[in-house]
Image 1: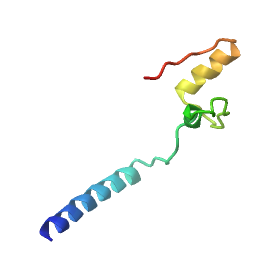
Image 2: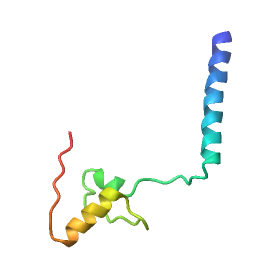
Image 3: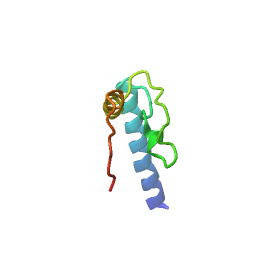
Length: 74
């Protein structure tokens, strides 16, 4: 029982520390733009972010120039 209580306290302190870090950094929770495009069958999904990530901006610039980007994932 002592191990359970000690484990509960340690995890509680870790969650409290993460919560304080998130609160004091004033950051907004957000997802990655274009993340859904990595799913099979969703390659042509449009990015609706107001400020796309660097990878998506490169892909958009290459698409405007008529280039095709081929990525190899391991």
